[in-house]
Image (cartoon, rainbow, N blue to C red):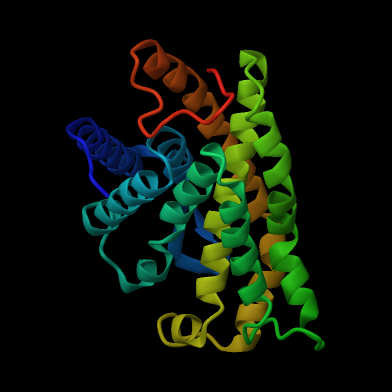
Amino acid sequence: MRISAKEEAFIIVFAALYYALSVVSPYVPAIGLPDIKIHLEAFMASIFGIILGAELGALTAFIGAFVAWVLPPGSASVYGVPFLLSPPLNALTVGLIYSKRWKEAAGVLALLIGVFWFTLPCTPLSQYSYIGLAVTWDKIIALALIVPVALLLRKSQWKVLPVTFFLLAFVGNQTDSMWGSLAFAFPVVYNGIFGLNVETVRWLFVVSPFVYPAIRIIQAFLAAVVAVPLVKALKSAGWFPLWGKPENQEI
């Protein structure tokens, strides 16, 4: 994939912006895991997917997340390694939907949900199946929203754009969250890195649905608030979208 000078500039600027926001934005400690922080700046990954497309958006989100993990106030802690792919998957999913490749986006999220159900903390068709429901109910809602969002993207009215971007970012942030849950469900992570047993992990998964969906809604709202004027400004400058406009869409 050849990257133009303009695209390189956007990647550098957006990755730097991601890091700058990581310095000043608030965060929410993961329940029972003070070493893991859910940073609100992760909402920027959705915007990267809209403006840069799936692949470049994911690359930008990874660079931004990696730099934020390495440089202060990050500490390059091993605890953050399993979750470095969360923002890139957010951008990838959003970019795929926005560029009319919604089936691929649905496949990514469905795969993450499906694999989670076969991890040890969940174990399908067992007494622990409720773990799968507790963790994935909101992700399943996000999966179901992909087709309606893809249909909304066919509309050209500016008045529907804030709602569309909110739903689009919600799907992206839920993909981010699903990867985080899946990564944490592997013994090499919860036991090898965090030193937890599977029963503790199950308890953490049970209490998570009461907090994390609200965080994803807040992130989606922030993404929509930033994306709408930013996209409008870039469109006026003739810089949007960089990767080619979806068919029948006017912004």
